[in-house]
Figure 1 (cartoon, one colour):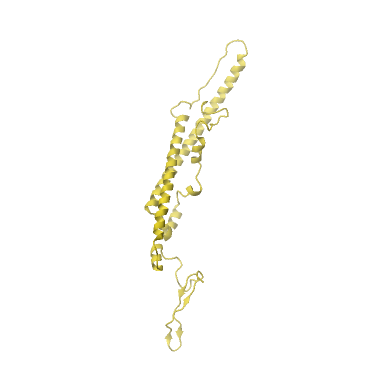
Figure 2 (figure 1 turned 60 degrees about the vertical axis):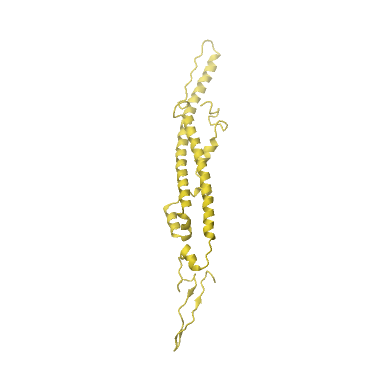
Length: 222
């Protein structure tokens, strides 16, 4: 532990890339935070015809699997980091006792007679489950996380290109648009003011109903 940790009792950045694995332990935000959706979000996306096109595509399934694996590794790395911190704290406490013992030995060395030196080996310095193996496991998970992150970015890029090709296919009629993306929730009806509606023919006195059709424009296009 004395080789890995300086006088302050904290790991030095020159001995191993501490910041490298600490960055992966932190909860990700922004772009990487869209890894796991709750049941409500999945339901709403399935109901939306446009969002559902890319929800269950092969590329989206691959991205979901990669992100699920990343979430598992982050949880595993977090547990390893907690255990590593506990082991470092135990070794620091022992090393502080060794420092005090050496200070007492230096003070007694100025007196006549021999000096008894006391040194307690830190418990996690060379043990099989100590600091070095735990640190190696954390760094191994970090490398795997970086690989999965690059894979996820590449899959997202491929999925965007595939989705752009699908969106680029021409839709020439409204019926074709509704077949692909679904009908809107607001239906054309006399009581629906947002959409246009063909009103019933007017009644002409003594002649029955008119053959003319009246289109009432909705608020969305008026």
